[in-house]
Amino acid sequence: MTYNSFDNPGLVKVLTFLQSHNTEYLSGQDLSDVLRISRVAVWKHIKKIQELGYIVESKQKLGYKLISNSELLLPWEITSNLKTKIIGQQAFYFDSIDSTQNQALKMTEEPNINGAVIVAAKQTGGRGRDGRKWMSPKGGIWISIILKPEFDISITTLFPIASSLALSIAIEKTFSIKPELKWPNDLTIKGKKVAGMLVDVSLESNRIENLVLGVGINFDVNVKQIEKSLKGTANFYGIASLSDQNQKVKPIQLVQTFLVELEKIYKNLNSKKIKEIINEWTIRSSTIGKNVELNTINGKIKGKAIKIDEDGSLILSENNKNYKVIAGDIIHMSK
Image (cartoon, rainbow, N blue to C red; front, side, top):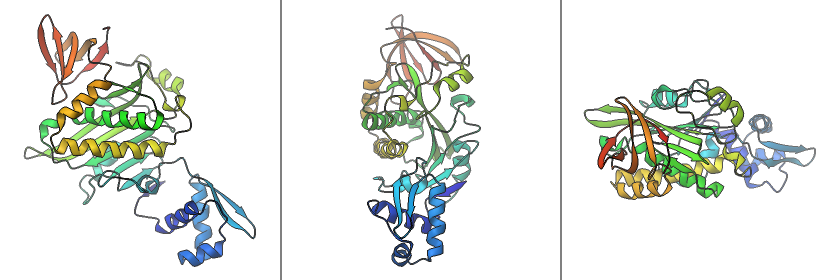
């Protein structure tokens, strides 16, 4: 099952009318007259709306009444009243896909695709950094965002860090909790991973042609089941689920808030306002100030994490010497 934000105009018209009149019953004839479609078309759209998880009550002689919205991150739900100019103004939904990141990479060559969001209810081949397996069952939020940045190539390594900051702010605003940021791009709750970022970049003639941000959020997942599957894998340090913090928050609330915050940070990157991002990330970081051990391509490095550089690199201090680490798996030791 696949949907996008510019198809299904008849269905969206019927749904929008039901949503804006959800305190009353609307007859099939009323919907037909107002929307200028046949009653048969109205009935077909209502059936499809119900199949998508919306609860629509139907009463003889009264008509239809929307009782509750779908929990699915459908394209028209993402774009509806979204307060962004670029990010999220196009959306694509897949019931099941190998990877939203793979799909997004295929779509980068399409015209006018800047800011498009690809969403999947579940992924069969989700991946994390360095090609690691990412468990992506139903109940999580699995999205990729296609961007065509104006910023310099040197900032690409900072982008996942900046994106994790945007998600942290969004979670704080919707759930009223403060997740911590673990370098380079993980979000944690009580030391357990609740979300992560992945970036794929396409370069041409020393400029960024396309950038695809992949975001995995454990929104309402079976923590024990995922931990059972991932226990023993490299750098595993536990799983957290946002629904354990507040079950009243809907997925669409978090996604829309995240897209708004991401666009703010994206504009700051394009305007070279990097220090603001680094300062905000540092305030929320669980890494800075900790003694850490890093597994890098050049072997293990130990030291105290003192700050992140303007390109997102981690600066470590050991024996009065500073070391710059661009990438690696990090283990927090103690303060």
